[in-house]
Length: 247
Ligand SMILES: [Mg+2]
Image (tube, protein in one colour):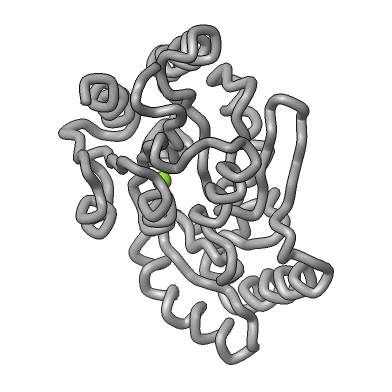
């Protein structure tokens, strides 16, 4: 038995590019092989996912990566997807009023920014993500988005990835999603590791025992990391797996 039961992995900027570039299936298959061995022999951490992406995207990658046992966190903590029983569990704080707020926020964001090329990422249930191809444009509007939510009385937290502004209910985060995952599975947080690259991944760092990041991580994530890979994205994840196995 190794030191870790679980490695919780962000997707965009870690396992896959955040752009629409093809994923590296040869390297993903190394992760899938790792998971097959982890589940069969229980001698290394199972790799599960923790992402801001909508649940169908996370479910797909979970299945590609041969994780058949441990839930994944989707939509920045809104959802747990459980591959062992095809279960979908939403955070209990989300009710009809929260869903109404998300719909109102989507409508307001489109009134303000659709003409500037902003689009809402399809498929989210209880949060919204604004997409624009220019990261500088997103950065320029993020404070105004935050101000608008505040003035409407909508409790939505605003955070940036490269091509998205994520707007999530303030009581929900990757940290709350991971805590639900751990309490559901009984996995000890001291036997977990995690990896991520942007600000929402600080929620992963908050809960896991050992946190790593690829070289493309933002400065605040690097500052929170126990291990910073010299390699980008999935090469950084593979590097972190080696580090965990040798430490
Ligand atoms: Mg990321």
